[in-house]
Length: 312
Ligand code: NAD
Ligand code: AOT
Image 1 (cartoon, helix red, strand yellow):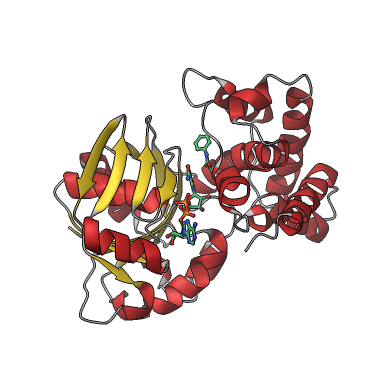
Image 2 (image 1 turned 180 degrees about the vertical axis):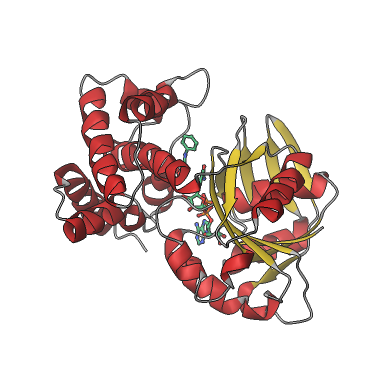
């Protein structure tokens, strides 16, 4: 299958490498010139579960995408604030038959994608895979993960199942979900607790879990997400979601991971996705008249930290 990865940072590189190893024709598209140049010159370098590998994949700057490039599937892996610009830049690549899959963290990306892609070609979901950028052209990939996805358009269930099968053939462990909005909120609870707190406190997830206040903060934040989700017809099983979130504290599985928000702000001085995670819940809380004080405060703290560090 001809697959374009729109946003070839940490996660896009992981997916690009795994899908290419699985026999797909992968093209990377990205907006970071130094990264694009490094991959063009020396290939994409990855530490893949401890082994150093180099994978040669075609890559182009998103501003250079033309109708000459073809894709059956586009996988979006920008940061949330880069999504609209990416879709605008890759418009020539979005043909009538092209399916578009979004696995970004956060809530409500379909509102942006719908401006560029017909509903029946949009697939949304979330992933438990992780990845880290080591520098231009170099990523670190360890551990296992999974994907859940669903069609946004009516009558596209079979297409969604096929898409999950294509991803699974490359070892990405994807499943069709018949309630993707539930799954997205459930994953957003992981990011709504781990990402902001680990960033402000400058620890990994295992480190956060060792504090005496972690449990109470997780419980309060998950309850805020659940109250807002309820207003949108998504009824989270709060106890199960809290247990799921707290399973991320386990140092023997995923606890050593620094959430991508920490990688962005603390390691690389970049702006964060907080407005699309806790910030989105705060905005929706105001709309539905639901109080979300921890989400409001965490969003403010992360923005203050961005400003103190002069993040860009
Ligand atoms: P990323 O920041 O690595 O890449 C996104 C874009 O930013 C790419 O275009 C990349 O080239 C560019 N970029 C990366 N570092 C840069 C730098 N130093 N300077 C300039 N540009 C830079 O993003 P990601 O971690 O791959 O995340 C993509 C999406 O997946 C996000 O929504 C994220 O929340 C989600 N996600 C991430 C992880 C993870 O472990 N990284 C796990 C699950 C979901
Ligand atoms: C994560 N991390 O989503 C993934 O870093 O943004 C991130 C992210 C899977 C399970 C736990 C945390």
